[in-house]
Length: 85
Image (cartoon, rainbow, N blue to C red; front, side, top):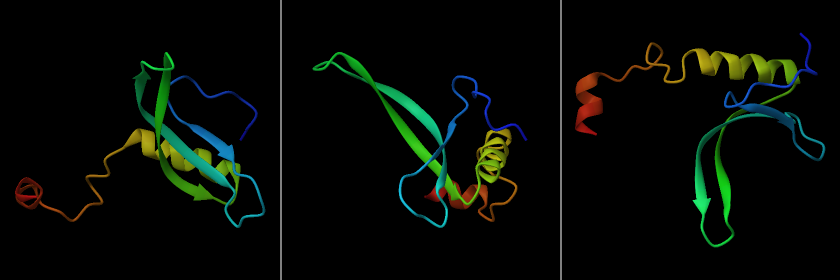
């Protein structure tokens, strides 16, 4: 897998964290952009999908998340339980 390519806009990012870590690569997606009126700029809100040992593993996990972000099939919760919550 060629890891040097830039990812398209809006599909998340994979980056390496600083320091010596067991799982140094983080896969994140951005939720929304909140506009800060005081500083006149947009502040991105990110959600971390997970931390991985290799960059390829993080890219694969990010692609799996983007194909099915809600994981409804793997969840054991019923619609009635979700409605009650």
